[in-house]
Length: 240
Ligand SMILES: Nc1ncnc2c1ncn2[C@@H]1O[C@H](COP(=O)(O)OP(=O)(O)OP(=O)(O)O)[C@@H](O)[C@H]1O
Image 1 (tube, protein in one colour):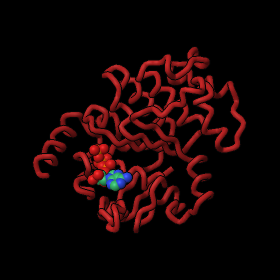
Image 2 (cartoon, protein in one colour):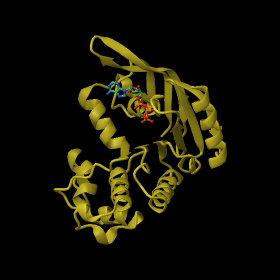
Image 3 (cartoon, rainbow, N blue to C red):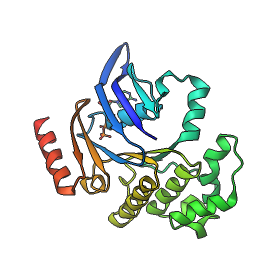
C-alpha cells in the first residue's frame, strides 16, 4: 500500500491556544518500502505517525493510502479502515497481562469481529520465533519477546501497512536486531513499514530515512548507512 502524506499541518490544543507541531509535511512511502522517521526530540515524529495512521486528524492536508484519503473518513469508517489495513507496534509493547500470548495476538481480529484461526496465530508466532510461548502470560516473557508478540499481533490481520513507534527503544542490542530483521522481512513481503526511531543503526535497516526538524521535513536519505544517518542527525541537533 502506498502512503502519501500531503502537506500535513497538525498541532495540539493547550488551553485555549493551538500549539503547531507539523508545519506542512509531505512524504511518500511506496508499497513494500521500509521508511524510518528521525529527528530531534520534539520535532514531531510521533505526531507524523499518528496523522499518517489516522490516530490523529491534521488541521489541514491529506493522508492518502492507495488513493483513499483517510482524513476524510469519519468515526466508524476510519476505525474499520484502520483495523483492516493497519498494524501497530509501540515502544511499550502494550500487551494485556490478563490474556495469554495467543489471545493477545488474536485481539485485533476479535475487535474487528473476525474469528481467529489458531493455525494462523501459531504461524504468526512462529515467524517471530515464539510458537511455543502461545499459552504463556506476557509477564513471563522478556522485553524482546514481548515486542515480538506485539509484532505478531500487528501482522495477524494481514495489514497492508505497519506503523512502528520506537519499536526497539526499550530493547537490548540483540533483541533490537531481531525485531528489525522481522520488520525488514514484513516490508520484503510487500507490506509498507513506517518506523519512528532514534537509533541510526535501526534506521539503517530501512530503505529511506525522513528527517524532521521543528515540524518540517528537512532531509531524506536513501539506502542509509548508520554512519550517514548519525552524521545527518548530528548536523540537525547542532543546527537546532
Ligand atoms: N498530546 C499532546 N498534547 C500536547 N502537546 C503534545 C502532545 N503530544 C506531543 N505534544 C508536543 O508536540 C511536540 C512534538 O511531539 P512528538 O511526540 O510528535 O515529537 P517526537 O519527535 O516524536 O519526540 P520524541 O523524539 O521526544 O518522542 C512536542 O513539543 C510535544 O511536547
